[in-house]
Length: 632
Image (cartoon, rainbow, N blue to C red; front, side):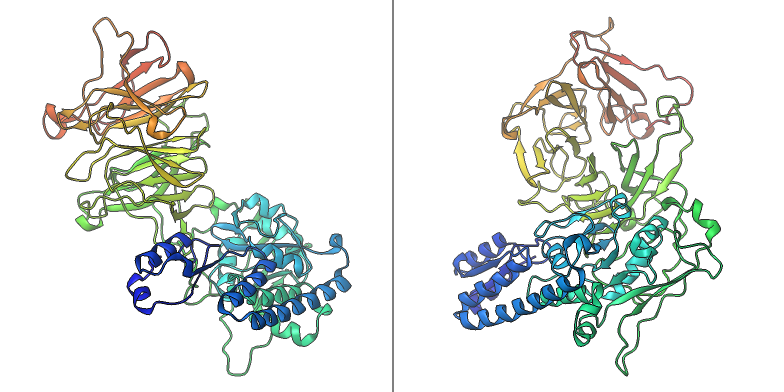
């Protein structure tokens, strides 16, 4: 978010109201304070509200009244809201009684990615006479959840309130991402007749203001309609929709999805108001259900999390035809995840594409062969094209090539590279959540490193750090090291002493877990000011402040009799085999401009340095046999 400093300087407001509950919803407190200083006003003019519970929201009403000198009006407003909450509490107590008798309510604020609503929403659910099906407490942050959590939560009611969406938009998300999963229909809420699944507009739930009381009344009216006055039920559920399911006439009891289902408004629409187009009845033949799996479901295109599609409840368009393998490309990233998959992202399309459209941003995964990678040196690939979404309304991912990528636990982190046209160096750190397949900007508390192409990224699981090294911006090569603290979400400059390798790009880097808490970033080769390099460097990043990390040359302690050492190269690949002192470093392929241009410069060989922690580590050139990669 950008704060208009010029407007602040001209208008000179006496009070600037901001919030620090949701960093994605508004300018952060620090940004507002900086803008006020720049406008010559000072941060004391800002009132920052950060409520995370219903009581906190009412406290914010009183704080705002005090700041405006309107304490009496604020107190009267808060008192009226508290009286409405008390009325709901009495009605719920009379209807549902003690905690154990209250329905288990599942509340989700997004289905793609799958997000359980937090902050004041668990409080709203509790005040409306429900138990949280996922066990979330009032004031806790919204969080990504797994389908296993949702499908096993035993929810007796489900209310979908998708961030930034109307009830019709939430219904569209439910059609695409929730009701297509047979296990969801086994929840008690979906087995009930009529089903207890509702979709509501986000307006009474997403803002920490007086309308949160409207949201409490809406939830209470959905869960305990007989306990509230009919007029309140009608007004509180206006605009809400419910799932209507029709089982087959001669079918078995509903443990599987019904024959037909649709969403319809709870309350009759006023005269002259057009109803949203209902979903076409969805047939789900019983014979097809046992073989229905997430991977066989229709692939859905990425959708905005803020704006519903033009026909929010019409059936989704058929998915476009998907290729069975990634298109020909260069300068893509290939990373290995903790669960054994290989993930390909981005790159540059073939030269027959127009220059401005060569940058790619697709994601593909390749699972291990049934017998495992080690038992199959040239497996028949079975690729899966990922249909990815984006958090909120973010324009991600960025098409790029020659970027850096690393699997960081449950995320893929990408940084840098070159724009779709290949002429603009990027920073643009972005994250792909590997379970929900959802992209988001990698927002940090400080600025990312300068833009660059052709850097490297490595990840330390022990310290939850991503380490960025080198690259170039078209005019100069970099020798800087940066690390991203993925718990504090802050970039740190590392290894600032000038005792490391010369600036370089197109190198290879891996993080070696040497055992006993010893971690080293190993960097081999690359393009330097003197041409291609054959140097091997080690950065000790085992502990302490990143700025104090130190470089050292990592030569072989002993070489073969002929003094074997890999020739210079850049644009090559490197990987670790094993861990601890017995690990090996594998270097494959690359190019060396000193050999000539085109194919003559390709270095088509593979080398292994092993054991990395041994007293006599040695480089050995692999003897290729059988089927092996083309020169690259």
